[in-house]
Length: 243
Image (cartoon, rainbow, N blue to C red):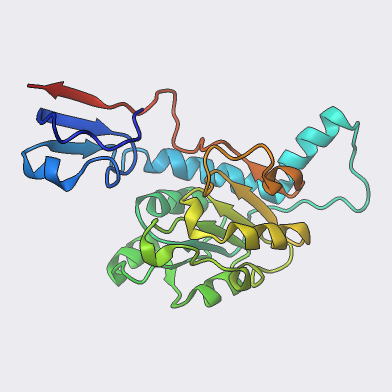
């Protein structure tokens, strides 16, 4: 899929279909010329939410670590082995857009203790999903055993999740990011991860593809996916009909 903005010199007759955000790919001038722009909207929300649930369970069960250790090191459990269930856990969602709303019913068989920090979402939407509002990231991170990062990639959200927030997650807790890599201070996340007190699962990163020498690749308490959450067997496409 092309990643550079579409050329204004070639006005589009009918439509452009793009996977993901269109903001950086389609200049406003093209829209003003009459280009119809569409993207996949909420159609992949449930797919991403499903992946988020998988990563939560993998992190709680240390599935990524054991899959590698048993294959490569002949590892086996001992009396110190830790594993956890999602049942009854307090889950926090940073952001409550379409993906979070799709994730809630997937979480409900495990827990009804779901809360969010999403100041622009109306109370009636939270009430309809049975989700509690918290008013700060500090409260969300300190009172959630599982934290799922799903805030939008806006200028005000750049590195909104700082080291101080990550250190509020209770020991043994889980941090999952299937939203946007730029929302979290990744250097801070590495520092916290190295202490081994929480489990982390990531599908998005500030630099994509993830560099081969990324510190994330070296830590056994981090589960990694290559921006896989939104995939469901087909690639997004760009379809353009020119005059």
